[in-house]
Image (cartoon, rainbow, N blue to C red):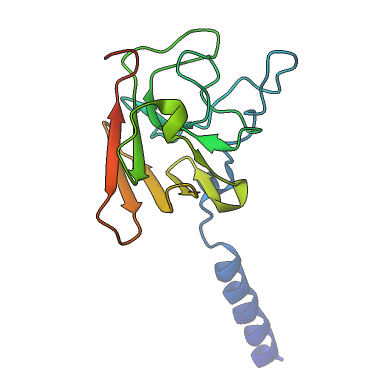
Length: 172
């Protein structure tokens, strides 16, 4: 009987240890929630902030035209760049912002012309990581924030015409 109780107790303790494995709760966060905004009806007025808590700056994919207010809207199908932002709300415009956009072919500086089609199926958004496939340029763009900057990785196709455009908007 003592062996039976010892076996049951040991088994229960083993199961408790397995069940107590640490969860990474940040993986449950979806930064795209609240981004389906438009002037007629807004469902959040947010942009997907890819940032560290209390970070010096935030990064976000940019689907909207510079100065439009909504940097990112879920219904959009083109990305204009990966934008560094200080914008707290779509009702307050941004300052000190710039955008980084990987392109192929000839360098394109106009944000409308360089925009690339994307699908949410090829987009991954977490507070600590963002990745998207830019179909028009055949580039995978990845972004990971740090407390004062961000790290980027661009996977270009093999060619001689791959560029990274840094756009300071409105003539700097």
